[in-house]
Image (cartoon, rainbow, N blue to C red; front, side, top):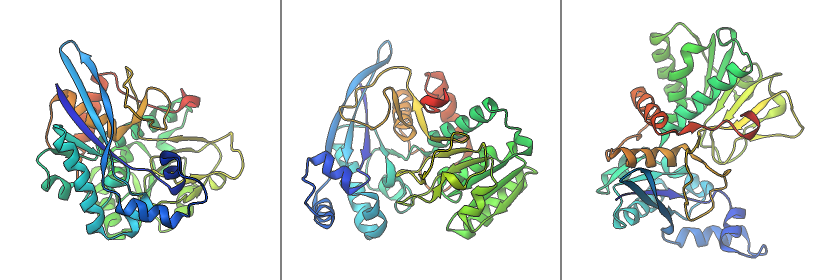
Length: 336
């Protein structure tokens, strides 16, 4: 029986309070101090499940007790050490591959340093996350009769591995692609690459709000620990896919004309007992977890989705594998 590991973390002080049952009067700075000194730990057993006759899989969730705010503000060396410790716990449990969830896939060189320090395969799951998001966007655009050849796509956080994958996969479908991110030199490199592969109009915007206000389809994939976009600033009928965790979209009044959904999610063809709450609808998991599971099913125990620039072939490959086992993009309950 092959086993996988997956590293998770809480996303806020309030979530930590709920998880540990801490009273509300304990101040946030004490909780952050507690998280900083708490070592990683095995959070849960993923109950064994059968993919096909004679093929059983099981796994473990490993808790890395830091919240996104800390992973951004603490030294990269300290945070990477915690992630490596988490991966080593998974290795000690006999897994053959470990997935980096949430911000553990963002810190440093996106998995390379972790992979160098353990004797198991490592993946961020970014290939399947990007595949799921782009598939969902195309499905919803067709459902809403959006003429992509006249439409504008905006990708927020386009310089990251997920954002660049989305841009490279979707740019040929749209009349115009707006890309924005903090790392301007990476955006210039991406623009040049996209211009070499298709005739789509590629535009770099410095301002996120300017980027989204005239876009028909928006994909948000950043590592910002706070909301960046308000639904009220979007054009009528826009489709917005938010892959970020924590979510980067807020809403101050109801917009029934807009389709807004959490991207990068996968609908499972069968139930899996993860031994802990995922915070998602029943039968739905994050693409990063799904990729780790699919690689385990396939027996592909090699470093997969790591680094800033992931080969587009990996997105296509993991997408084909997902389809072959009935793993489908999740569009949200309201979107079918």
